Length: 88
Image (cartoon, rainbow, N blue to C red; front, top):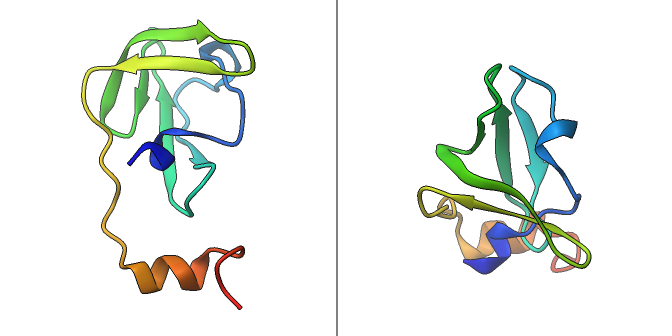
């Protein structure tokens, strides 16, 4: 579950375009999350609204959202087939 919560990019709310769905790959599994910034500055990650955005950390940015991000269902075999580091 934690692998779904890490992205490959360091993103802050101010760098995301307004009104455009921005799909980002997760860092450790081959599933994406969608970030959406509204004209009034709210940021949604999938269907969750950020409660506290842009929390700085040493080499990352964290967001507190109002719900749990759940991993879309994907079989282990599908994961192995689509993950370059797991497939042959």
